[in-house]
Image (cartoon, rainbow, N blue to C red):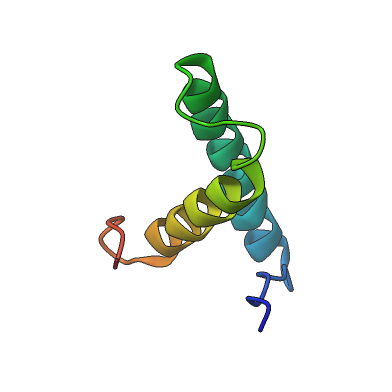
Amino acid sequence: MPKETPHAHTKEDFKELELAVKTTKEIVIKFIEVDKISPASFPDVFNTIFETVCRAVKSPTGRSQA
């Protein structure tokens, strides 16, 4: 079953989602630079990092609820 993708309903939601995508991109780029991510694992790794970033953004303490 596919995981639900976050949707932006308000301008604030859109900004949060945009920030999460940009943050995920920067983290993934760093992992690629240090050879921790291969092209084959990119989609799974990106999704995992994105979900973690989204949870952290939504958490009242700013910490991931993993």
